[in-house]
Image (cartoon, rainbow, N blue to C red; front, side, top):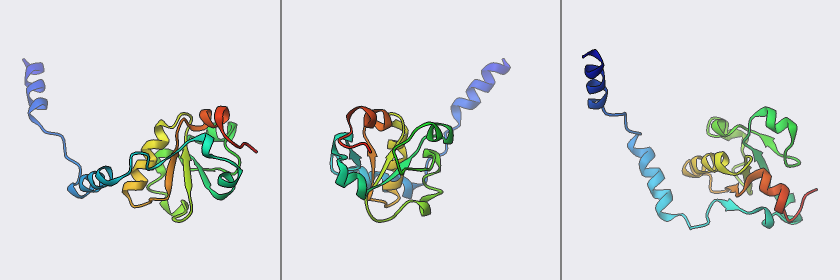
Length: 136
C-alpha cells in the first residue's frame, strides 16, 4: 500500500519546466539556424583553416593529457557555459570530444547563448585522426 501511494504521489507531481526564456532562445536558434550551422568536418580542416581556429577539447583532463589536437585548450563540455570568458568571442572556435556527441551539446549551448562563432568537429577527435585534411 505504501508503495502504491508513493507511485501515485510521484506520478501526480510535474517536473519543473525550464525557464521560458531559455526555451524561447532554443526555439529561435533551431528555427533560424541553417541546416549545417554549427558543424565542421575534419576534411575541411586544411592547413589554412587549422592555423586560423581555436580548438577546444571538451573531453575530461585525463583524455586531454593522453592525446589532443595540437594547440587545443581543455574545457570539459559541462563547463563551457561557466567558462565562456575563456572561449574567444571572435574568430572560429572548434569544439571536439572523441566522437562529436558531447561537444555537440556544448556547441549547441554556446550557440543558444549567442556564440555564433563556435562549431562542433563532426566525428570528433577520432574522425580528425582518420580524415583530417591537415595534421601537424
